[in-house]
Figure 1 (cartoon, rainbow over the protein chains, first blue to last red):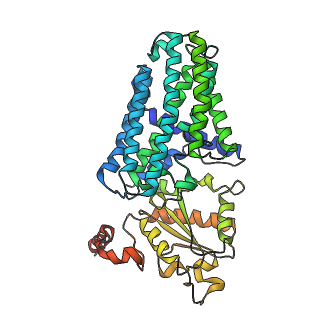
Figure 2: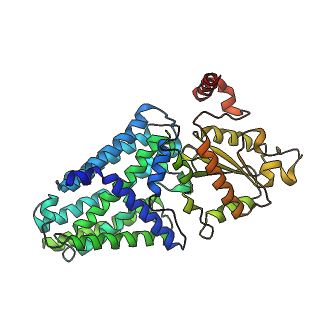
Figure 3: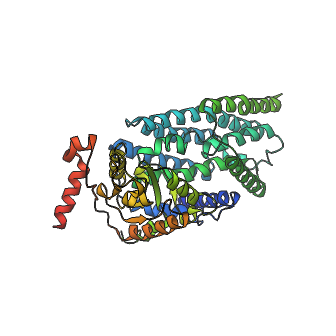
Length: 272
Length: 175
């Protein structure tokens, strides 16, 4: 059963992304695209002529997608949380290498910003994993999911995670890696056709990755987890529609100033 | 492949280029993309990146300073691609026709598929044109389309560019 979910993971992520586009349109009082729009885009991209700059550049995007898929598979199989976080870091590093491997200035800018984002959210993710460990006594997701809810014991850690969710799903105010009117997609800029599609699909998997961290806060009650995910999803989209992009350096300051201190205070509170 | 062809119409991503326009048509395009007319319900996204777009929306009579970039952007869009000329200036030169510093419309540089009249053309017309462009996109093949004229850096390396060689090859195969 788990294996079916793993194979269907990009489709599931695509549905979430399509639903999100409809939701954002409704928030702006528009009709919005159909729910299956991401799949239409994918099929169209398959039919486009592909321009490749050089082979490693194209291949790194494919590798990024498959490592990310493996990460999501590891989450579904309930493996070690620390292992999953570092697998995800590996996927990001492949993407950053792809950004630096071409001579386009915008691609380099995008890679720089992607690095800044990794620097910003990675410590918080690890602190979230440490918080789970302190309560449940294990880094394994299967064990974490047997605990009875982390919501009341790790409230500040949840707020810290809430701050970094927009970074990961590339939403305002922290969409500096993509920044469409500013650096035209950053790393994505030199990709076209089939290879752009891999980057487009890896965005779906990022959604599954970060929202599964939110889901873990529900513990053994899957209903609580689902409610948390739905609430965070709505909140992130509301904030995305209501705010502008912050400066890249300010993002690191905000995350280190608020999210990190919230996380550390919470962990100290549990320890003492 | 035949299976994927119908999906071209369902997600036409646009690239908007201002070739010396007065911004009237640009504002109408933005109005068409905005909440009231909501082009996104057809799957349209304003990508701003030629390598990922299908429809090239051009506004303005082509000024001498902008024609080089116009041709270069056109060559960077992967096939199948459709060019839409928005507004009177882009189709014929409009009030600027015959002036010393503009060209009379874009169709002497790149092949145009859809012409939209109007100064400035209304959002309703732009929506109609994009629907029409989607139909044309569906009927096109993946054969390489070339601009009529080359400028600057592209011209100096000219036929050494592999894409142009490929175009020649495709052309020879058809003969």
